[in-house]
Length: 154
Figure 1 (cartoon, rainbow, N blue to C red):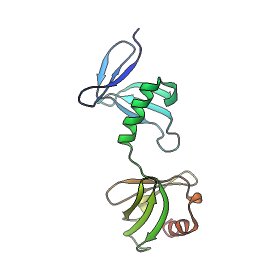
Figure 2 (cartoon, one colour; figure 1 turned 135 degrees about the horizontal axis):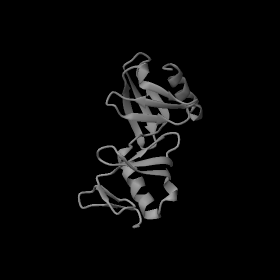
Figure 3 (tube, rainbow, N blue to C red; figure 1 turned 180 degrees about the vertical axis):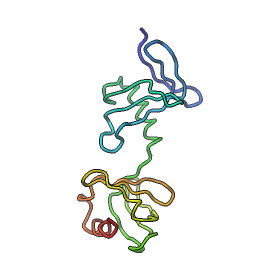
Figure 4 (cartoon, helix red, strand yellow; figure 1 turned 180 degrees about the horizontal axis):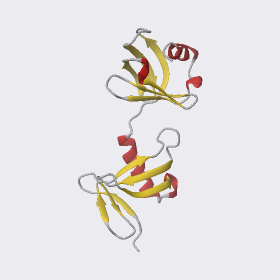
């Protein structure tokens, strides 16, 4: 039985070779819990959405395969993490927020309070008017001013 393989073809697509030796071109890695447990539970899906491989833990894979998957996931899962809220244009929506993220300062427009979703006790997911998702991993860890701004919208 040949070993599992994952590589990129000349078009940049992921190609997965399963235990039977069958090659699957254009596979897509999908995390089961991208925010709460990003390293646990990952599926490799065919372009048609069929699960080809279930991976319990990313670090259980051979190093080159884990690195390739991590690179692919980083490209697909762009989700800046908000570290501070510096200014809010208005406490009525829509409002423009000036925030510091793990990728640098930016502005986002919040259309309505419904664009802020709670994820567990302290995590929040904020969608801006372009559909980009911003993560606040722990709102209690934010500075006082940021928490004060958030409380006006929660």
